[in-house]
Image (tube, rainbow, N blue to C red; front, side, top):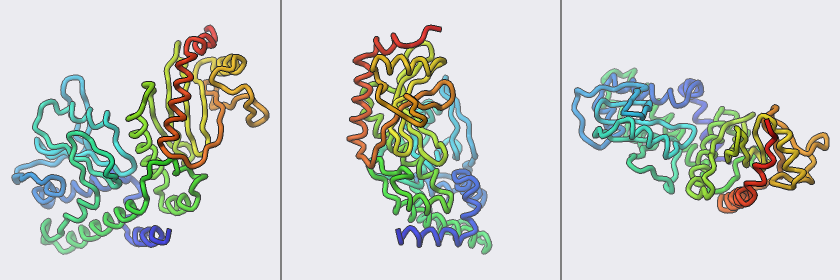
Length: 335
């Protein structure tokens, strides 16, 4: 942790860090756009090795449509480069494919800029530029002769390199090891600089990329942040708006049902010994717990676990659901 402490100290010494906290992705995209107002060709070179002319145009938050496909890219070099910027998480294949489809058959180079990266990932048709790649390529004197602007660009370059250094120190393992309860020391350090939730998004998105490569039961996946904890959902649709699935939050591995009469549905499953455990006792000795009226769940605790073992556990639970799917659907309360 000593290296992380040192890097955090360097980050906090820059006034740019406090601007960065307000909107992480917008901060960088806006700074890059500002660079383009100083020198368009030098800015384009940060993202592409292809030669460009000086008549190019940069645009922030560019909306693009082709047929049924619509998307917005963070930074756009007209008719040349579409740039999607990621600080807090990894994109999904679906997100990036939607962007590509929104440009139709246009001869556009697609560039993913990212603070975090791991060589095990790849996205078809996209060039990856890490923040370190971009920062290393910045030469302030090539953008302007104004010494104040050069100083500002130098500050940004060093700040981004410090961010990249921190990113390299936060190892992205193929393990569920990023719950607060499993790493309270790292939580304290990242929460101090308001990067803990971003780290949770990063790790949850990475987990789902790997799970979806082995999604044996065509379940819907998603993640969010709840009280600074990544909440990761694996969901199967049933009938009449009812759903069933697995949810992971911190060290709780939850089995849940969703629906208008979720409580009755849960009780029916428990009494039939289907999916939900008829020996579970939660707070107040309840046989299930609640998130509102329509979400009921039971949980068991998990510790640090490899993706391989975690995904096997999830897929086994969904296989059991499929084995009993007709009986489970039969427990849905009548309207």
